[in-house]
Length: 429
Image: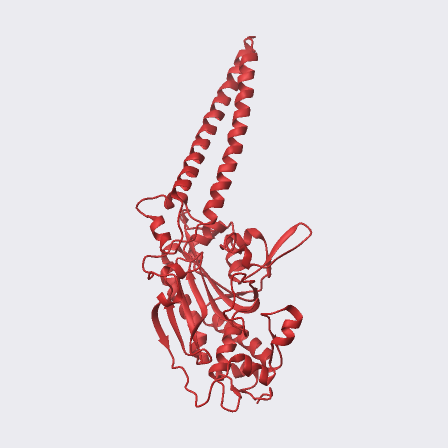
């Protein structure tokens, strides 16, 4: 969430920055809300000061035996006026807060213009897409023929866009999660967490999922308690420190977790509805960092490299792109996408998004830091997928398929899977 004074600062020109991402900032309404809040606070302070003086006069007059009825009436009127001003202040602040919660983060100037993926800027690429002397199958055909993926039974259980994994498929999923966590905790310095999958509205609001994306969330509750299923572990990981003051000298903090993720994706129709690319429920290893706000840009480069490392070890061809200003997420000020090569589609598809949110989330969640000198400091949060289990499985089986329908497992995974090949009949060797 933004400081409204910065949004109205002509030198920052937040309105122009937000136009780059397709958002029109209503500066007139914002200015009126900020001005009225200041006026109401000032009037309230004046009324309370006057009430204090009047109370002193009443006491002094009473001691002198004077008629205090007129002054008591004035005190009652002031008390009523103070109550009215306090209520108006609550209303204005609630309206201002609602306004600010709807304003996305300001994109950095370095982002290219544009609102779709074709405007992304190529940063680097790694690996060479495989060449096949046969027509490569997609992951659905490969998985269903070998019997380790069952979308039909998943639909019977839960409806479309869910998956059931069996045998080698289930084991491969488990192996990927363990492999990712081992790399990030043992080599990249992340602390692993086990987290709730249900969180409060306040928690969702802290990272920017609410109110913007309410229709894309699964909501549940017991009795009068409202809870949301998390769309990513970023939500509970960031909010672990909601309302806290961190020790500046202990930054950066690096957190990771493997969790289920739930997204209704109410606005998504037609694209990627077949297979594992866009599911209502999937699992993912998430990376989150808290850093000194002045160091967030360099921290982004680091967290992207952390997301890339498992890709390299798995031997998956990929590229890194910097998204255009109009294509970044609501809470992001800059985003890099890591895109993996999918032979069945003949193109690169996003497998990890790494975003620097600056102080946007930490302001919403009330997270600050303090140094040894006692001075407060701003904290930035960053997040990246490190990596999603389903999409990584898709890339592995498609890039490592053989002419006979078997699938070779990357060597780095065999200590976790216990096999190096998934045979066409679903057996392993």
